[in-house]
Length: 402
Image (cartoon, rainbow, N blue to C red):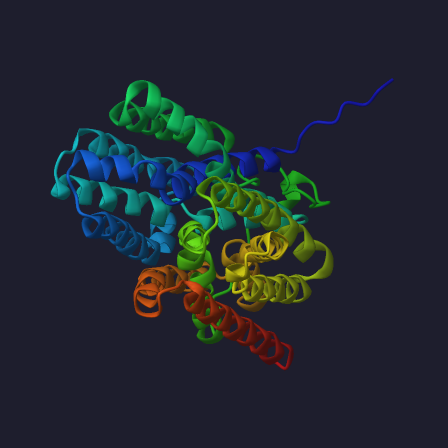
């Protein structure tokens, strides 16, 4: 008769991690822009104060990321990731109740704690424990959760705001944070050996796998990967965040600009899974260099947006969208290939990436004020990405000579 195929427990763990990243980084970083104009209006904030809320969140995210590895050495990953959503829930509730700038700053700081602790680092720990094969694909699926929030969240939240107001929408989001944490806690198990299971793709019996081997602490390649991560933040942070205003400032209608940015978000989500699968099949070196080259090419084409050729604009956005997966899932893939999967090294690389977002985020506005256009900023970002790709290439060459 027909043989029943059960889903391996590792994929449920992957689903739990994806849900957590969807909720933490996805909603706080990618969807919160829906709330911000309403919060600025209700609390009577200036545009500068609104920008300072983002700066506060990113600064606290950086500090939280710097202690993330130590946090998960003290608290088991399953419990730690679920608990790390509580500051995010409190953040949304505080935003709903706040009418002052100080209250909003406190909410932004709480959101930063969630972003820094419930990030790609613990997801990578789980993937390393639960997957022997298809690690890149599993990591890509987890990272795609952040982009999925950008696709699903805005229309739902806009509908809630239109029907019931900003406070109700924020409180519903807070409730979703709690529900996501509880659901993910049921899906995730910390270690397959402790549950009497084998990792996905491991041919050994569960009782032969034992505990996970101690991770290597080789962080010598960080000296090249950290600057690359810092420079890649230009593409994943300010270049992405200012794409809508770049298109609008060059004369694209607001509805067309919104459609183009949504297409970029969908391509980014797909690119994360494709990069992970490509790393599994062709190796991290070939996949990283290919997607890094796509990012450079896409950003160069984006510099031609002022020509008002829709086909060229779409091509630039779609190519760069695929390449932007280097800014998320690409970092742990590079860490696995060049630093032996050291979580200490991954923490440093991720911290450098967030520091890049913090330092480079004012550049587009400043350059646009001086030059009268966002185009020079995107030319600069393309150069930064090219330098990052060069640093990655040098890293692989140095590693191959060891």
